[in-house]
Length: 232
Image 1 (cartoon, one colour):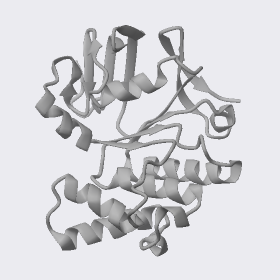
Image 2 (cartoon, one colour; image 1 turned 45 degrees about the vertical axis):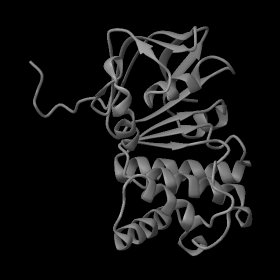
Image 3 (cartoon, one colour; image 1 turned 90 degrees about the horizontal axis):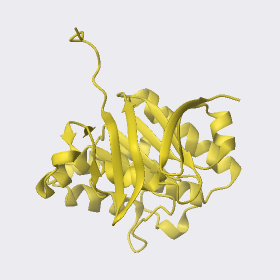
Image 4 (cartoon, helix red, strand yellow; image 1 turned 90 degrees about the vertical axis):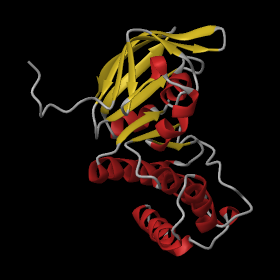
């Protein structure tokens, strides 16, 4: 009998197929991610890594025995539920995807207002909190083009944290960064994972990251993914 205090996985897939259009890109994926866990997803280009990320936010259709994310059943997910699912998930992209005509603060304010925040004091306080968390309080009024690549990615991470997500999805977040900046972003992601208890799923092909920040890895190849613990 399961103990009532046993933590329930925040992501649980059992023999799940993931489709991209007419094509099945991942077959029979079984995956369990606990609250506060850090998981890498790796594999060659076209191996389905990003399709897994898209399935978690209700973008790519799934089928199988079980597919649950943050309390939502993806096998029976209704379109009206998708915005609520996505509020439980923060997403960080390789190319930052900031609004280039707005300041750092305005980028963050836009997201909060778009997701229903109406109290200006609460909005201001939350913006200050996330900028402090990523070490960019002093850059609030800068435009994105005035920031380095690493600083832009920190803003993107701050944006992903705004609604206190239970899951952070990072799709090649260091792909456009140099080695030193990559280290600072990885340190930040690990810190968020440890301090906030946010589950982090990070897509990467960078083996150096896996050796310097070892952990559980989902390796995808030829439509099949398997879990390993990478340690070098």
